[in-house]
Picture 1: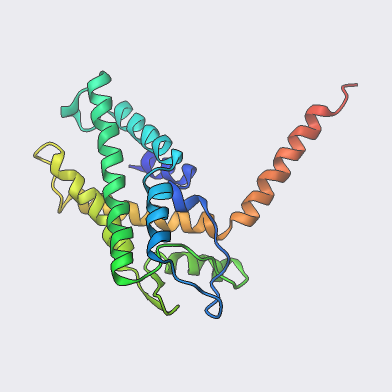
Picture 2: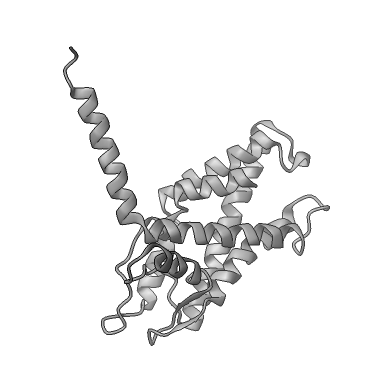
Length: 213
């Protein structure tokens, strides 16, 4: 399970997780309209190339671990695992986006406009459970939680019989919520992370270009 969390965190999850919005400003906030929500689902949640890379990595991890054992290994086993990962992801994001549209809540993450490690970290965790409605007010994010638990729970219906949506499905839902929180942390501190890796990259290039004595 830990390897699955690492894979998600490294890839920052598909679609929206790779995008970082400006801090939320109630005065200038514009909710997504229907066309924007559809475009988001098609190009970020349903059709982004990063989704397929994510699915491929997670399927490879499951193949290496041989879980579920009943699916065997080889081409057939890997195909089932890859289809399982993609189906679970698609179901989860569809639930999230669909319920967000129905309840007129925003599925995007907005970083904190505050300063300080603890305040920004607390905001990232808080927005795992909350979101903004069409009036720009914070409300419980039932859509995101439904997607986080719904995807794994429904996916367990095509697993071997000893897997239960109410046991393993809920357990994987807990993991998914943790992954969402990790992704929010990455989004929150992405300016600092980008700066760090750019500095590191420039340092490595400079050392490589330094003339040898």
